[in-house]
Image (cartoon, rainbow, N blue to C red; front, side, top):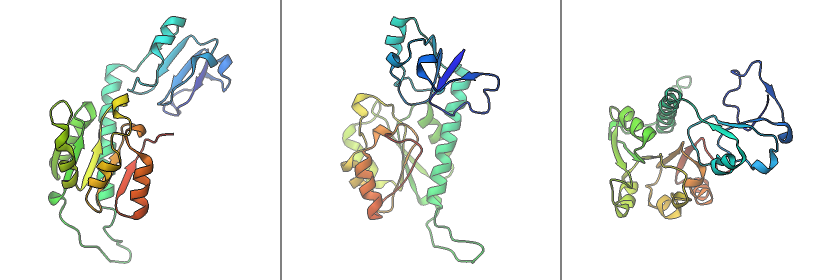
Length: 224
């Protein structure tokens, strides 16, 4: 079967498979996080989503056309949760220790102890809860989840945080969730980490804050 893909997730694990760049020849679509238009795939028989999100998978249209849709096993999904949480933690540490000096020139910058820093984790789902568990031994961790907290409390939590990490889903009500107002509430020098979805942050507002030098950010997801 001819496979069309828009992700490099399984590169190196696809030996012996047949791939095509022509959508009209594709029988299987291997999806990352970007959406597809099924009208461009007249011969498609199946879709495999290489990841945990479903927001870019046209399940209803696929069902109408008799196209099978499949996702990773639960065991694989748990591995993705673990790896994403671990990667998020690595970004937090990298950003907090970005200015530790250079050993070859033997200079250093004074910095507060990590235990004096506050990490705000927004979203306590499968990944967010793991980040809570992993980071609690190192620093003060506070959380916000719309299912457990009042939305009116969020800006106060934002203003206290040295680092904020986002773990909320891509749904309509979360479009540009972290907007200019929330960015403005962050303290000078604070860090925003996003390993969830690009669309949940107002990128234009964030770019303005980063360009001014007031805030820093570490993202592995973007709007485009």
